[in-house]
Length: 488
Image (tube, rainbow, N blue to C red; front, side, top):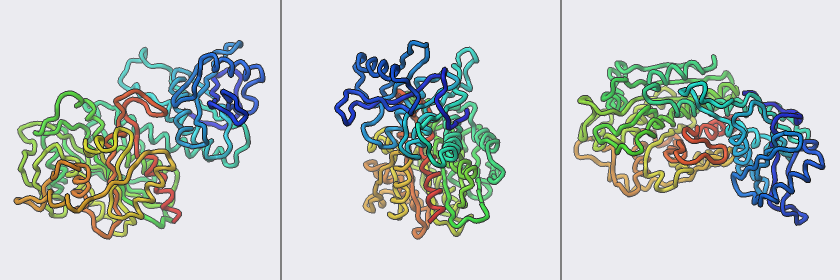
């Protein structure tokens, strides 16, 4: 798919916007690029929307055919010029147009930020995943989206190129998440990622024999119950003029049965998405490299299947994490923190001059209980680092909320057998998981833990620019954070 800046065409579907009220007391006010609609079309469209009792509520989209047979799509816009609602409006319109090859978004933009928001929403909303369907069941995909802002916007074409680069990576991440676990094994994950890497990103893989030999006890323990062995993928991007260096670590459980702490059957099918963190960090480094940002990035993806077999890790087993700390595995279903612990220690060992490290994981059901399905949690050891990340997430429209790491919960991780246990106090389980991970990061290194269990995978109805299935959540925040960090 291509994204271009241009003028409204004459025949392809046309997207315009409308708001509930204008400054002159109108019931509805159309928002269209100059020249997109004739005076007669505007009058007809406004009256049609009034006849349909359009209310301009979120995700409201109306499809109408004008007297010449052209499809006009009217998308409800927010009353204010907030960017995230604008993204969602464009996304809802794009979802309504799946099956059309070419589309023009002719929504008037006041500046480059609104142009970018509409482009992002349009591309995100047009996403489809049909890799495992027969050709007859697949609707036509969008081939070209034209953005007609209605005015000259300086650097608009470059802004759209940046959008296309980032959203292509989001689509790649969504594809990985949506793939069935019989297909997306740890090895297949690595092969697919390698095929997407630009030349400026180098890959190194540690296989399961090496993991065991070199003391990666967390990844080994989690993956030893599966016929598909665990692996560790390390990607590095090293531009010549980098002034900063970050490490991103993502949880890569390609399927999670819970191991010997077997999950209930209902809902287990969504556990193919338990590698969303790993997908986000590899997608982020790919986008960062394509954008040629002047910042060094390491991305780490510990990959394993958490399966049930005679060789699976047992409750009360003691394992040794890379670096030497021992962990009593009280619950084999609290496995993500074990593979992350290995990768965090290794990431710090490899890059001793890091400016910060961020791990991304679908880590706890407690995150969903605390914050719901659309807001992720942020925990860390450095308030300034956390606030800088939150600023980036707000800029791109991804919802994160800061959470504490209460010291009174730390003793619940104590084990009489090992250095610590992998679970502790049940109440505040999301925070306890963050405290566990903190044990594997130097206190003086800025660190963030992103628990994205809720917003990473959408099992409900599509909304805004979010489809059913893999969301690609956190990637855009990670890219924007790297972009801002590189200029400090």
